[in-house]
Amino acid sequence: MKTAVSVANRKTARPRYDRLEARVSPELKELLLDAATMRGVTLSDFLINSAHDAAVQTIEQHKSIRLNREASLQFANALLRPPKPNARLKTVARRYLQAVARQPQENGR
Image (cartoon, rainbow, N blue to C red):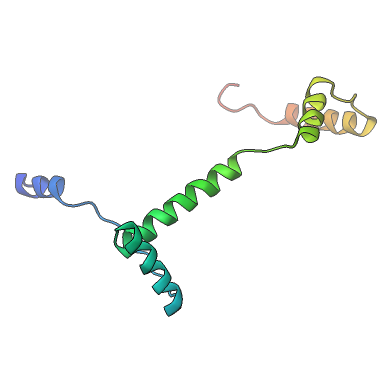
């Protein structure tokens, strides 16, 4: 049975954090300590902030597509003037439509 005290303690309890560990060479540790000192933060804060920044940057880079001018024009032309479907594409599309038509409809769709 929950008591008012246990519920109150849970609400004021500090959030739980996961722990990460890494083994590094003494030289790398010294380099990281120097960088953290130059920023005026602890080694842990430096590592967390650096890892966070690198993760965000990596994810953003993978979310966007960067094209040079020529590739950008080719992409736009393909969207604006798509090629006519060839016989193979028509055959595959017909098979797909037949397979979809044979499947039982779910949720009344």
